[in-house]
Length: 158
Image 1 (cartoon, rainbow, N blue to C red):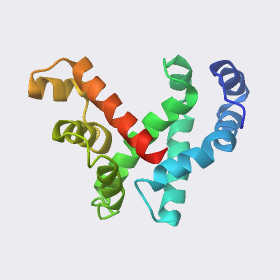
Image 2: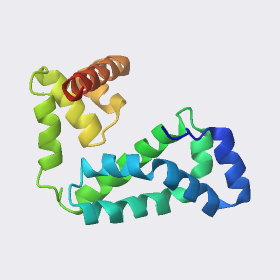
Image 3: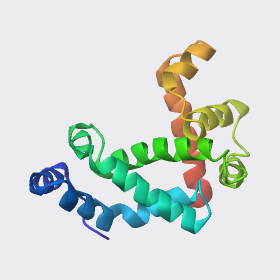
């Protein structure tokens, strides 16, 4: 398994300039992020272009990754998800729902509330706080439902 990039490693690369830091992240995490992108954009060429756009966009924001409370890869994935959502909305959800259908298939045995929370947070990019207000619940409650969804998906994939 490849070595995880720590915030200290990334900071030292940032002192060398944005390009070396971006190259390091791409070499370590490009493959994993590409697999993640394919879940939303199944056409490989399109997904490759999107991967390049993600690293280009995030390259100038790597200090944010260092300042985040997330691991470097988690930060990359969260930020990539925002870019992917924006891209798929501009494309009119160009995957014709195939990536979304896959997630719904994995969650077919989950409650309607779980499915709704997952769809709104993960696929549509809404915030926990928005959903909590909408259903008059605490954001921690919504977060718990999302964690349960991810556990269901993990079990199905495992």
